[in-house]
Image (cartoon, rainbow, N blue to C red):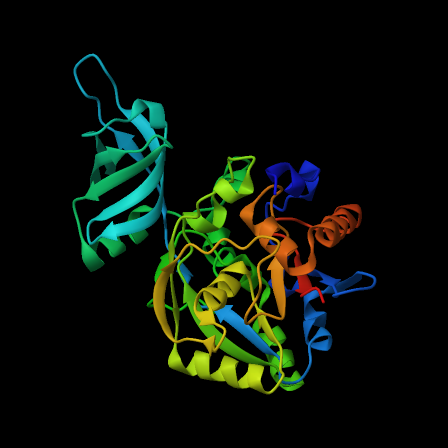
Length: 352
């Protein structure tokens, strides 16, 4: 497979910079296994599902992973340098890997100051990835990051406007658990859900199962090689509880459908499954799903619209087929659906 196979033209005005208000006012494109696409709203989701279907939801919470501060002057002839840091993976109680700008002006040993939180660069990779050793650890570091940072909006939003108070709620799902504040991006398909929608799903007889995947760089980093097989996903931590594994395995045995809400929930259950079913436990997953992948658990996926040439567009193409997803996205662009994290949703069923 070539990276160019997963490209498509997307007009800039289709990229959502704000979510629908209320969040369950988003539109929903229905992509059945065969036949015509359907244009709906997210509140129509219960009517597109069947009693007994199981929605799989990621309960991770987004942390304030975007830090702004300074690199103090190195000597009398220099000056302070403004820096922006996006944390993406914690590797120790007091250390995080991060992307930083301006990367070319930062070097090993530099101190970074984010208010009362400080860090020192311990390593720098060729790809602009930094290892930062902070002056706090454990819970104290978590609290300091939350106090010093901001919601880590995707670059295509942050480059167009500043993060503001509305993003605190807008970029967090209603499922986010207080004790799971560890994601550096939102599981955005879950952003559409409200109490009103959940009440309708419950009345329809749709069940929900909870998993956790702490979103990291594996979800959003671009593919840089034209040969897709050469791309290496960054690992992300995920967990499936005993109760979730039991619920999903029972539903599969009874012929009921499993529909993850978002690619992170899908990657979790596929990572934790084998031919005998879904396993409880936790792991670091770097699963990379591309066309030809054999799904063990998933029957359909509720997800947002993804970037051209992204691993997530490859994933949805693995579900329905590349040609069908190219056609679905062309339909969505023509019908002025809103794309990416704050955009609309689509419900995709696995190709027969």
